[in-house]
Length: 192
Image (cartoon, rainbow, N blue to C red; front, side, top):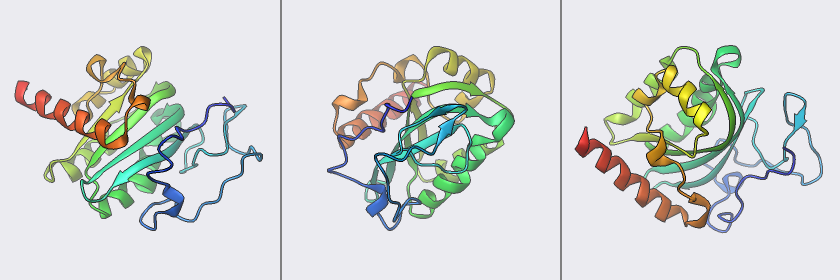
């Protein structure tokens, strides 16, 4: 796992450590000092720790004018033992919401497992953004992760599933990914 870096081709567009509105503003990274682990496996030092022992994030892009963020995740999403959604919500999302970010794209292709608990924090997040035209989309979830998320009723608060997988999001520019996601949400709402 130590060789899996957060997606780096958008670094010319955005760096969370240089954004004074980012929860990771001022962070400094080492390419050689491996400290963070998912269980016994070190992960690349570019991933950001946000309070979870098993899930790490990287804010890849934020557009304050359009009001959206693209966040990549890696590890095991474990709400059952570690309340990872609580850490994500309180330590990243709440700060973004304060800066009027209401639309979220979570890139989940490196989320290896999901263990659900209650869905209160998902509901809270959803309720805080829905009146502002906000939404949450999970891209490229592995099938067993998607199944577990559905069992935990996460799909009531976030868009996930086959329509949002196999997108090849890394081949796009961030604004193109956002426009695709926004059109997908519009299509979903018109069919609901």
